[in-house]
Amino acid sequence: MIIKVRGRSKESEINRLKKHLNDSGFELHVSQGINHLIIGVIGDTVAYDTRGLYGFECVESVIRIQEPYRQANIKFKTSKTIVDVGGVRVGGDKIILIAGPCSVESMDSFMKIAEEVNKLGADCMRGGAYKPRTSPYAFQGLELEGLKIMDKAKGKYNMPIVSEIMSMDKIDEFEKYVDLVQVGARNMQNFELLKALGKISKPILLKRGFSNTVQEWIMSAEYILASGNPNVILCERGIRTFENYTRNTLDVSAILAAKRLTHLPIIVDPSHAAGRWELVEDLSKAAIAAGADGLIIEVHTNPEEAMSDGAQSLKPSKFKELIKSCRKIASAVERDL
Image: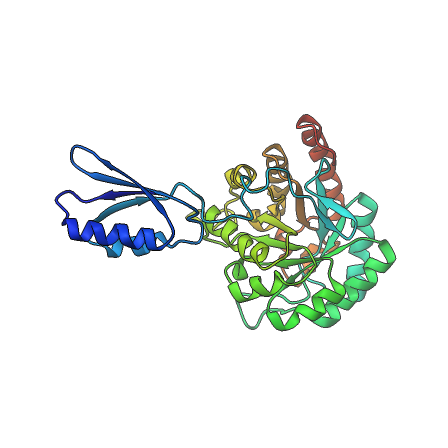
C-alpha cells in the first residue's frame, strides 16, 4: 500500500499517521519527494480498511497494491480449483452444461424437460423451487415440493441438480436435495447467507449482482471461502446498463477478469443476460471463446406457457443446435463439450 501525504502537512499529524500504521503491524518505507512525502506500507493489508486513512488530515491518496481478497486470489492458489458437483467436475478440460426450466412448475412438465436435456447431453439440471420475483403477485415457485420433484428427476436420470436458495432457514432443505446451491444476483451481497453457506459442504454457484463490480463479486466469494467452504463457482449473468434491447448486458470481459484474478471456475448464464431466446446461442459461443468453464441455459418444452422467463427459454430443438455450434468453438479453444 502506498500513501501520498499532502504537501505542507504538520509533522505532528504525519507522526500520528506513522504511529497508527506501526501499531497496526505494518513496516514503513518513507520517501521524500520534491513536493510530497510518500509512505510505503509493507505487510498484509488484505483485512485492512484503507478508507479509514482518509480520516488523517495529512493523507492525500491511498493506493492499494494487494487485493483485498486472499483465498480467492490466484496468487494465493496458483492451481485451478475444480469443483465436484455430484460427480461432475467443473473447472477442468470439459465445459459443462446445466439446463432446465426457470421454475419447477409440476412433476409432469419437469420430468419431460429433464428427459430432453438428459438425452441431449446436459451434465446437470437446473430449476427454481423458490423464485425471487420483482412482483409479489408473480409465481413464487413450488418451494419444498419443487425440490422434491427435482430430486425424483435426479434419481431417474442420474443428473445433479442446481437450484437457488433464498434464505438461511432453507439451508437444511438444500443440503438434503440440491447438489449445487445457487446464490442469485439479488443475494450476492447477503453476507449472513454467504457466511452460513461457507459452513456447509455443498458447492456454491455464486451469481454476480446486477450492478456489482468484479471485485465486489470476488469479495462475496471470499465470504464463502473464508467461512470454510472451498467449493465456489462464479457465474456471470449480465449486468444492468442503459441498454434495454436485452434484459441485461453480458459482461464477457468479466470472464477474463475472473480467470486472471482468481483460481475459481466460472460459468455463464446467457439466458438471463439476453432475456431473448434468439440471442442465447451466440452469447454462449462468445462465453466459451472467452474461457468460460460452463453454461447454464434455460430450456422448456413449451416456453410459450412457461410460468416464468419463457421469452428467454430454448426449446429442446434449439438447445440441440446450441450444443452443436458450441462444440465447434470449444474445439477451437481446445476444450471438450
